[in-house]
Image (cartoon, rainbow, N blue to C red):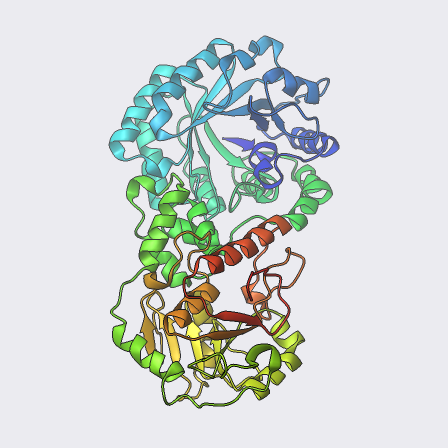
Length: 557
């Protein structure tokens, strides 16, 4: 039973492999002193330049530049190549290299070419470790085909890589049994876990408790540092193997490495089990799909799960941003017949029953009668920007002097009487659910058809897709949807409060911290421009009057 550490390689996904030279050496020397059987020192990737502070190298010679003159103790030293990122020419002959072996990872569709590459690596004298990533993407027929290729290669070891942490105990046992029965006895068999289901450690223990009549390799990393939900913690594995497998790893050396180096990285950029990794594992899909949908900030968890469930099997583990965007829009665009609701809503806001008044606010209402305005009552939209409260005095004056129809957009403001609530965001709806119970029945709730009611039925439901701006970066911006709707109703003046625009990440943009996005100044400016351009594209646009300060720069207001 062999224990392999992959901290300097898999852990590098957390910090772009920039551990710093001193930390790289400290981690390496602690692992050697702990007598870990196999130590992986990083990626070999021809796309990257040599940087002594990083554990990713353009060629094997560069590995030697970092680790020259260091001892190997009892350990086998390996590097990893993601097939297709490093030509064979970048590998020295093994006798000239610091490395004893090379681990080659490859996807199912590249297995034939990857095995040819592995054979070239073996011919250079390296111990070859063949690593089948996303092992759950292999059906039995594919897997048997791969085992035949592995037998032809006769590598030092073959490992099952559970890239997205999808394997439960029974599935792991089944793959291991097929591999054990199908491989030549001299080929080692390994397992690389990820912790999306909190099963990395327990799955490793399952293997260690059921040894095979061949070399077995189990991967771990310091404090579980690794891609997405992280790996099995090597300090736990070594402790267990000392107690139950007759090993004598020096666990304190691993703890020193964690204390001196790894914890500092963890505090800056945490890893490990997280909600989004659970969601991806529960839906057998790439975690980037979950990240993409969560960053929309518009979907409830139920909605995200329903979209993930619609991903085609062949797409699940191969992330495709365009594909998930199409699924998102298709899911959101639930068509409904809204003619009747539109007519009722238009009558409510612009019809004869709307109270006629004479405005006294000069910058908005001067000479309205002289200019032939039909509807003398404007609409005030309340947005969730911080200025809705920071400049509440301005909003109060506007309401007192203009008597507008007040509509809150995707949030319920404290301290304001409203005449309606517009909801186009399922996530915001879930966040407001408790407050909605206390909303007076006379205040209508207007929702777009992508939002599903969980309690009080919506008073009006509008066709979501009819309010989109397909040319916009954010096609369903609620402000644009409301301006578009009110323009179609013939509303001539829209007052805006709490639509602050977006500042860079350090600035609070919303009154509710649950609404916050994290983005750069450049992205904030892009979001603002997107709204400005969308407003410019609207036909028959009402006049817009910002009551509170805003970062939007809209012409003609």
